[in-house]
Image 1 (cartoon, rainbow over the protein chains, first blue to last red):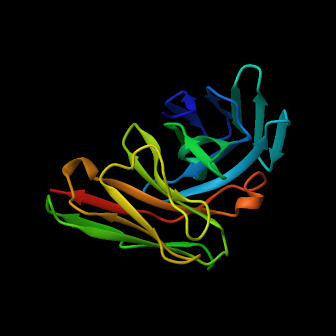
Image 2: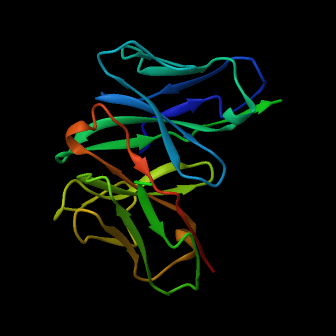
Image 3: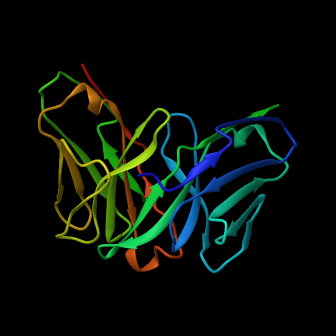
Length: 113
Length: 115
């Protein structure tokens, strides 16, 4: 069964505004990752936060992780039209000698110019 | 550019036909994965290969088989295609010992329609 669940399912904002997406998961993880998928394309890795980290930044991205609540958030600051895409959280855990990623259903972000 | 290459990009099959989806990576990654993506369902793991010579079932393996041909190549086979297998298929790879620090690299996908 899928581990991560993103919220909201869809989000529409004006260019320049901040976008926040949330992810909840169910079991213990090694790390949590966020991916972006542009329409009709493959997924692109954005950022990874380990289970012992609470916050991480990368450019206009800020990710937080609260393992006690089993939740994470992705903040995109000063959004641009090019940020329009679907965003997926993925939880990584160890099993059968390999790390596996389990994906949520995604948040579809639309940034209006 | 280095990365994950999937072929074909598009395919239409008739129910009962068979086909193999090909995936190759040139990043010297140990682990390779096959996912399917359906509307409203996110990505679901079909099979994975932790290293050359090993394969394991994921969340939705029924109706599929895989072969890890060598370190670079990981193929997905549909022996008798069904309409329920209409989906977009993604191959991904990762460096096992670094997976705690790095994410996966995905191919651009194969859009499969079974009629």
